[in-house]
Image (cartoon, rainbow, N blue to C red; front, side):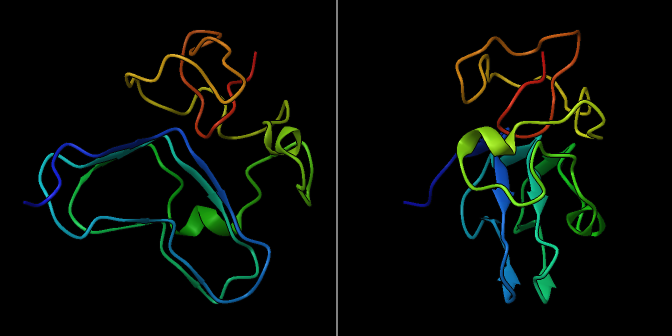
Length: 122
């Protein structure tokens, strides 16, 4: 039986090396959704944020994968480095989804609208 109702919400995907960047792939199933995901893969030679059939909203676009999302660190290593800096274009750029906390278990949204990615900016 194929999967159904798989939802991929508010993730941060990052790749520092060359090669393919393909973080979200839907192959089979119905009721799939990908919303508020943030991706950055400057050095990747092939970039596609999402493939397959799904409801897709407010994710980083393929063109956006080449633009710095404004993380706290230009070369993130530890989880805290993936938080959004004050000037990030991902702040308040998401849509409402049933994800009520971020990776640090802070309430989502903070400030009126949901941020893209795993971290919610206070």
